[in-house]
Image 1: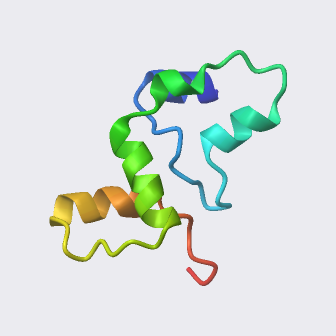
Image 2: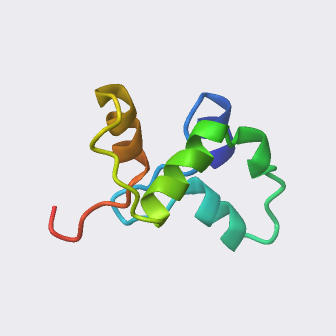
Image 3: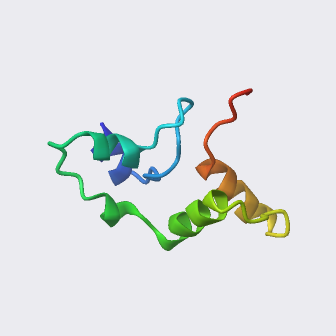
Length: 78
């Protein structure tokens, strides 16, 4: 299922409600043959770095702020 989602444009680093990403799920499965790097874009790596290091994103254009939000783990309180 993950392979199909990735082939149709799903981001490998967008978390579900449980906070798991396809990337994380692939890495947990030692028998997986999915080459996740094939699906990672520089935009996704940049979003991960901004989130991981707590860099301010409020000065970014709204479209980029929305992109960042798709890469954030869900809030525990939502």
